[in-house]
Image (cartoon, rainbow, N blue to C red; front, side, top):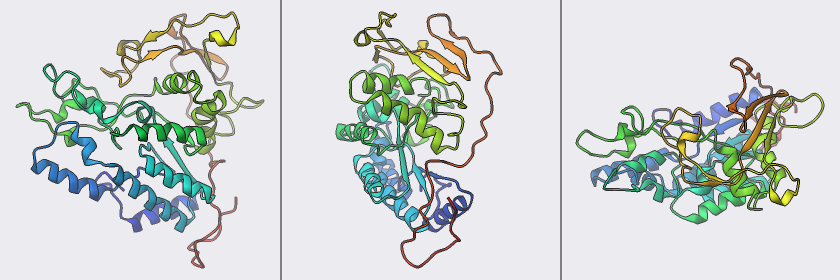
Length: 351
């Protein structure tokens, strides 16, 4: 639906959907209207409005809203389960919720940056020192201007609109000519459309939601586990070994520090303000630098073995311990074998 030259027409999307349906797969969709975006981008360039902030202007909510509504209609026509990824718009989330109330197999995800950051992050924090720094926060869909969109993303996690909570980890270094600064000309000219899309976030995904959701009382611990572990395992075909605490499943756990409210008498973590140097990615910034954290994973256990011990050196897992995970069919997302009318393009898929 977006990213030329990978953009597909609706008929081509339907072809992909029917192919994935025959294989029992869930189709993942980036829902933005590429023609709208290209049309706006050309006109912004004509006006020389190409600084990082205009990335958000070039991809307005309506581009996500329209594409979301349209892909839901295509999925209903072809009876195909879909996952609409990295959602950011309140109205688009409303389209998803409406489809879910009609029992369509429509799933959606949102990401940490759509809970916390607005389009203001695309403006330079210190124009006199670095007028291009807003490029650090270029991602698509873009950070939204209205905080009501952020509140809608929180609401979608709480009410079940969002099946999963993902990082959309797609980092590029900022201070590197092939990274974010690919959009900065030698003469100081700025082109947001030359900046690689994406933010770093794989290491901060769970702490950000735990801090703003669980510790604030906004998101229950059960919902936290559901959107970060259980649902992803089921949706991505790993539900037979991952995402559940039960006999026969892999012993995978993240253990947090006890809190004062728990009254356990255990060791409570000293709150800290995040600095990029504390993280383990090979990227020169984090969108969550400066955020205060009152908890962080203390231990990570993979298949019964401790691989992260924050109090004793951090990473303690051994190279090569990781395994390739062969996925099966989703246990969370299946066709309904119901059609919009008498047209039925393929034999029924047996659940």
